[in-house]
Amino acid sequence: MDKLSKCQANYTPLTPLTFLTRCAKCFANCTSVIHEGTRFTWKQTYQRCCRLAFSLRTLNIATNDVVSLTISIHFNL
Image (cartoon, rainbow, N blue to C red; front, side, top):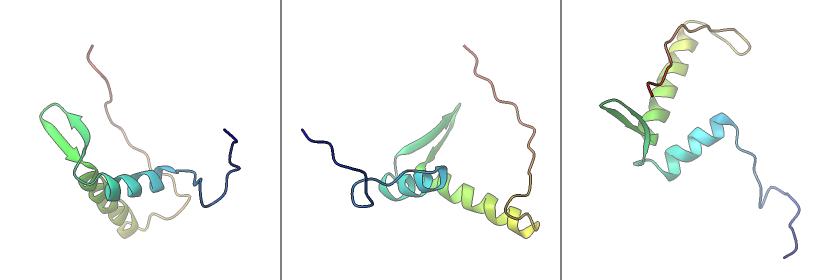
């Protein structure tokens, strides 16, 4: 099989934002996050990210500003 060269018609690279937007549209009701007893769909994950982005904008956070988080991330094996 001949390989097709990449062009806009057959190849679009996914960024984290385009990935999230695409999943929210294509897999809206599929589970995206499971943590203990909490489950989110892709649509809910997208909506939560949009709310966070809106909140950051209301605090006058702009492109290239640095936002720091202190969170605990670990997996018990």
